[in-house]
Image (cartoon, rainbow, N blue to C red; front, side):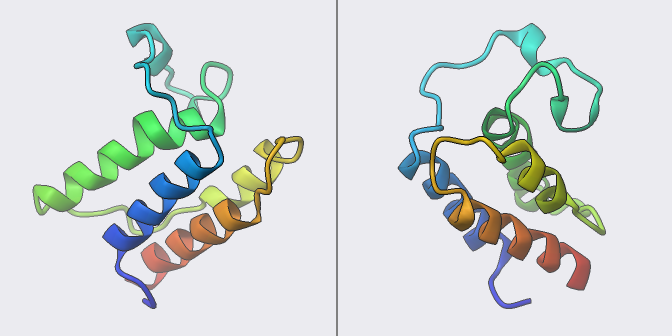
Length: 105
């Protein structure tokens, strides 16, 4: 693994902030109740990353719980961000690095 997962999570958060897709207001609780992968239909990818993925992975790390054995966020992200109004390459690079970190762990 080239970078520690926590460092990649911090980079992910900073990238979302830099691209003005980080939300300061919390989401309505019902928006977070989707059972579909990536909360498709109720959250955008940046929202899912901010409100679901980042908190859950950070909690697992903090509590010393097992992390997922694999991640496959980047293939979905490439499709979900196809029409984004910002340069998605830095975000996709971080997500690819995260996918690889979990695969190699």
